[in-house]
Length: 258
Length: 258
Image (cartoon, rainbow over all chains, first blue to last red):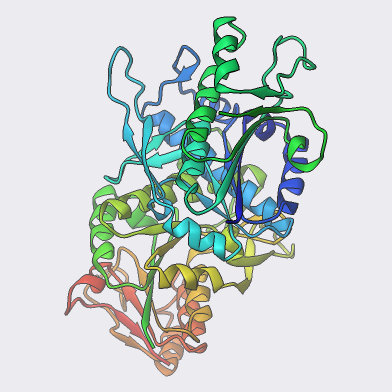
């Protein structure tokens, strides 16, 4: 079985032109097959401000009303996705931009209204890999933005970490899939103030201890849930750290294991 | 040889929600293989206004500075392209959005500065059909927005009519290609005030007469140049008219012939 690397880059890389350029140069050189998932960073909030549209947040999560969905679609599927694809082409990596609507690749359901109405936010229901596999066989690298659809014509805003883990799981029957979450820190940190306090290995067992100790909290919680979800569904390897972990040996990062 | 229909829809259909919905319903039912190219309509100008960015025009053509290119990329490749793809999926037409950067499908060169600097505008240099053919064989319908790239990381704004004719020409060795320009009029009109004055057939010979008589002028000139360019490069059929010409028999429209 071939190895498929699924790599997710977060907002801090997207927002930093130099870091992004360096990442894409490195990514282009990685062996195929590979797949990129990107977040949106602060660009959507910035555009909303320029258009005098209020950004509503609830516990750090964006409420996606119709206008916000337009902004996200323009920014993530338009400006950022096409910029990344064009830069990868310049680095001789033949890539193709995707939302979940493209090729009907990621179908989601609008999150039901409970205490909070998150608006046009989708939870992944189904991943169709047929066309993606055809493209990977033809040495094309899919580049996913964090937008899905409900098969009834509605686009939905979906968490990019979740998209990456769902894609990794969906490919696990056909490839030895490896999932890499790249962000601005060196990995999961024991002390958030200390970038050298990387926890190099997390297992199901040690995870529980880290949770009990309150070391894993806030934004790291859903990320690690995505990691364990992937591992529980035949994904072979999950790593969290700086993008350099992909390009150089001996770069400290966190490896998650069952 | 299979027939490939390449259909271009203009701004007036994009801007009219009801017309677009009706068109996409009909388009979804057309036999595959098929390919859609869409313009952007007034949406980009509207967004520029909302963002307080000046739209500079020269003889009806947009000057594309860096900010305008961002707006076009967000609107055409983002909002409009994904909205069309999602609506086609809802109509059981498995489609996939493209800019020319995606799959390195359309390479252009930035227009040289002569009397006017059009900015980030690209003239088509090369069409790569390899991946598009793989997708068409897999019953996927490509949906193109009017953005190309220069293979060096630069996106470029490109005329949608030209993209449609260049795609038709590029496929002419593999398919019997037919090119349809859909817009709000019934075809090329003898009298622009009279929607019944459709010229049903134009040949190279009668075209010259119509030019001499001043009947073909303004926006219709580049469109007809695209038509004859396609016909001179093995495209089998070129039509101009309302979208209904695709879905019903006996709808008056203009057929261009060599």
